[in-house]
Length: 110
Image (tube, rainbow, N blue to C red):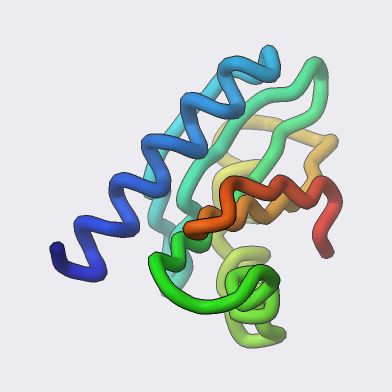
């Protein structure tokens, strides 16, 4: 399985998880400029931009640590474009890490 396929499977699993938590998934793989957001969801009145990190091997938290300053900057840029296009005002950034150990969801990750 390629890294791309692994990522798609992880995003699908994360989307299902969010739906089970009562969130509505609005977009997958949203691109704007040089940034991409894996999932855009709504949690009540809050728009949630979700970065999904899927790791088949490795230790827990490696996915969280992979969302470095450069990655966050690209996410912010894409999120601003999405918010401008959809008139959204409230937003947060979450990270979901999927590994052999399971799924971890960090709300308000940055």
